[in-house]
Length: 150
Image (cartoon, rainbow, N blue to C red):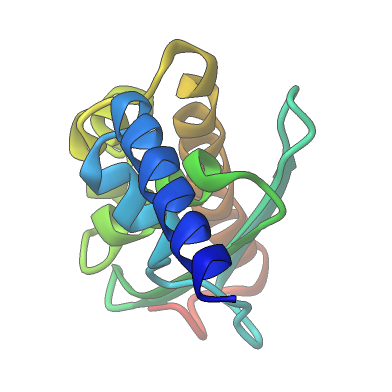
């Protein structure tokens, strides 16, 4: 039993060495230690987008005095997908709606220290979903008046 545990530990070390060759420390951190993960009851802004890879991202916004007071997300995606959306939510928190427009694919990639080419679409999906949630808030505000989010 002890030998099996030692072999498993060694295999995990080798695997992590390989993973670190592909992803930055920040990507691994944000992908495995998810910030702002979970749903939100009665959000002021909401969006759900499924990307071409099949990952679905939901973003929930609580907006007060024109700023993102709280933001939550869910995704059924991989580690890079979680990292990108987690980073986007951290970047948006406390910002004005206008400031959140600067949270885009390239700013998320920069924030994370990059992603492999085959994972860069995760940052785009995160940005698109955030912007759709912002748009949803603006449309709801216009439709129902200034209550709730301002």
